[in-house]
Each structure stands twice: as C-alpha cells, then as structure tokens.
Length: 220
Image: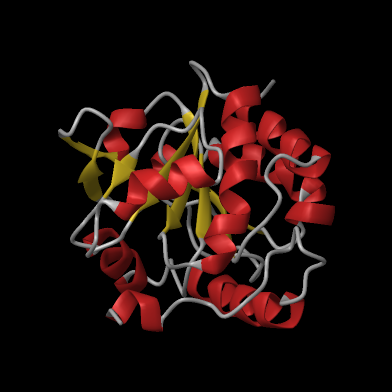
C-alpha cells in the first residue's frame, strides 16, 4: 500500500446515504483550519484573488444539500501550482487553465468513494463543460497503470478528459500545502486560478445543488 493509499479517507459516498458523514465533517474541519475557510477572513487577500471574493460570496449560500461539505473560502488565495500529464501525454499544470473555472479532483482506482463519485463528475462535465468550465480529474495511481482506463470504462466515464500523475507528486505537494487530507478531494478554482472552496470526500456533483453552485461559480 502506498503512502497515498494509507491517507485515503475511509468514508462512504455521500451519494450512498452519506454513510461517512461524521468522518467527512471531521475532515472538513481540518481543511477549514488549513485553508482558513470560514475562519473570519482576517488575512489580506492576494491582489489577483480580490475579485474571487465576490464569487466566493455568491456561491457560499449554495453550498448546501449534496455539496454542503464544500468549505468556501472567505479569503481566496492562488492555487498551489502542480504539474501533471494531460490527455495528450504532455506535461500540463493549473496555469494551462487560466481563463476557465475548474473543479480539480484527485482520484485513484483503489479509492472506493472515488468509484462512486466519478460518474457524477462525468455528468457534471457533460452538462457544464466548455469554454468557461472543466472538471480536471487527476488520477494518482502509481502502480498497475493499465487499470486506470479500465476503471473509467467500468464506471461509464465518457466526457472527462484523462489527466494523471503516476508519481503522485500532486497529492504530496497539496498535502504539504495543507490542501489535501485524503481521497477523493475536490478544489474549486476560479478563472484566475484562485481557490474558491474545497471538499474532502465524495459528493454527487451531478445533483441540482452542485449544478447550481457550479453555474454560480462560472457566472452563468
């Protein structure tokens, strides 16, 4: 078992009756502390992320129901830069998505909640993906890499582009920055690359709650 696997959150999908709600909320509290989300907003905002405050304020009331566990930032900050492999096999980074709101998601084939969450991420991408929004789901498997494509086929993924990091450095970088406590984890970024919110654990991203929040984040 890899270090990343040992850090995976032992929770059930919120789609499946929110069986792990207590553990998700505990992880959420940790993320709130690490991110400074909901902690009074005393920190000075980075100049490039000042406009993101308006977006965060707009989506905060919509973090309910299926996406109630999203910790919305009171003081949005620039995302931690990470490197990964794009669908074309070439190196990519978050900087490549400037100008587009993205939902960054970390997943792995051995993560049971990821298996349950992935179809809803695919449906979100199918419905809202385009010039102003994309779900960037990054696989962090480090062994038996042939399982990744099979996994996506098994869960019926058709719309998500395949992003990956077989070194799992993405997870380690975000963990050291206090942005990740386990898998799955989702981070919502605005078009300037500023963090609007984060969610530890799974969610039904194709739900009405998630669709409304995502549309508000993109300004639709």
